[in-house]
Structures are given as C-alpha cells and as structure tokens.
Length: 129
Image (cartoon, rainbow, N blue to C red; front, top):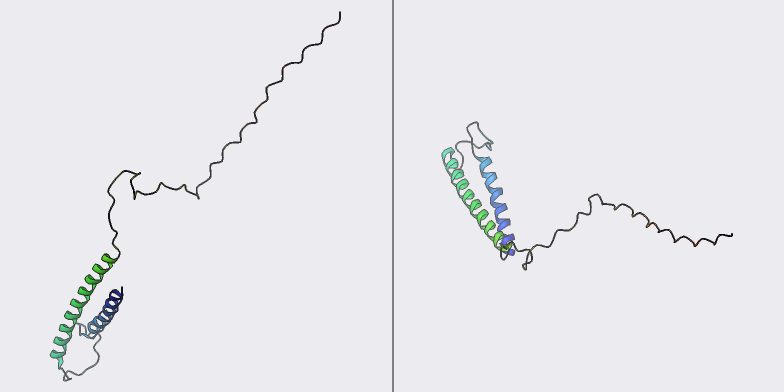
C-alpha cells in the first residue's frame, strides 16, 4: 500500500509540472508567455525546444504512472473467483432477497368474528291439556 501512495504522490507532482510546462509554452496567439526577452538564457528557439521535450517526457511519465497505478489498484482489489453457476443453493450464491421495508404494508382484512351456531332449541315444555 505504501508503494501505491508513493506513486500517487509522484504522479501528482508530474501532473503539476506538466501543467506548468504547458502553460509556459508560447502558443499561436502568444499564450501565457512569461515575458522573457528573445535573447534570454536559452534564446527563443532553444527555450521552445526545451519546453517541448520536457512536455513530451512529462507526458510519457504521467501515462506510465497512470497505467502502473491502475495495475496496482486492480491487483489489490481483485476478487478471488467469479461464480458462474445458476444454482441458488450453491455455496457462495447470493442470499435471497429481503423484503422491501419501505413498501406499502399489506394490511390483512380483519377476520370476521366466528358466528356462533345457535344453541339447540330448548325442549319445549309439555303442553297442558
């Protein structure tokens, strides 16, 4: 993990240097020229060649570091195996879906009270004659 962090810091520094070098270059419209005289330390053409070569090598370093960091991240976060079975009871199969707790609850209709069967009629009293 420390190699990953180290390479990430190096890539951030390379990216910052790349942005700086690109902004110092003279574009067709004058760009963000830093106001140096043509007869400076490198001369106009020498500075342009130096900045162009520096941009090329910083871009190569940036892309290389990006690929390396992607490979390191994929290796550290890789899943062991891929399950390709449709058997839901197989080991490693996904657990059954849980019910949706936010859905509208289904309220069962209240059960009608069980109607009591009428008791047997009381025997009729004998009629008086």
